[in-house]
Every structure is written in structure tokens, then in C-alpha cells.
Image (spheres, rainbow, N blue to C red):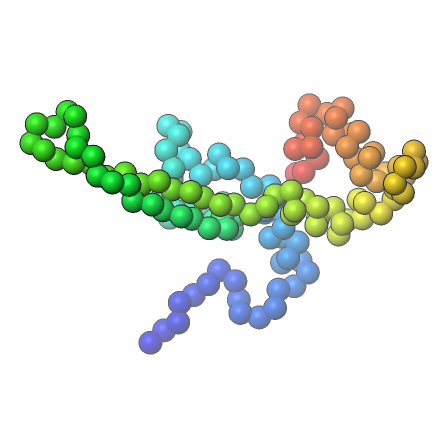
Length: 135
């Protein structure tokens, strides 16, 4: 019997791997879950980055309802799908700590020294806001 394969090796993750996964989580765009008409894509059609950002899926089968347009008494069942994604803000916070964005300012200090306050001011000046900084 073969064991199922996982996207990650069973050994410990390196610093670079952890940072790569945090970066994926921080950059996750929920629009990638949907097709052009707004329907949820099947999981097999999700990119690796999209799949990595999913923390859980709950699927609830709703009670079957009789179709109004069907004379033969056929019914239609529906599903309620709830998709929980990883916490982007937490990922950004952790990445900010790794890159020292929070170290250069003291609470109440006007001197930013290129820290988070300067980064946010720079983001406010750019059209892309914070998204323009996270490439």
C-alpha cells in the first residue's frame, strides 16, 4: 500500500520555505477562487497559491426543493459552501516582523527611520496603496 503524497515534505521547513508560505498567504487574492461568471471554481482548478491559502471548507447539503419549471416533479438540491482562508493580516504582520518593519519606531516617537510609519506613508502616496508595496 502506498502512502498519499503531500505538497510538503515530512521534514522540517526551512526559513525560506516558511517565508514563502507566509508570502503566499499575504498575497492571496480571493477572486482567484471564482471563474469569470462568479461561480466557485472546482478545487482541482485552483492554482497552487490559491490552494495553499485555503484553511478549510465546509459544505452543507441543503434540502431538496421542487423545481418550479419542471412538470415531472424533479427536485433540485443545493450546497452551501463556506471557504475559510488563512489570515492575511497575520501573515503580513509576521513578514513585517521578519523584515524589521516594526523595530525602527518607538511608540509616540515622530522619528520613523524607514520603519512601518514611513512604509505606510509611502503606500498612501502610491496609487496601489499597500498592495503596490507587496510585490
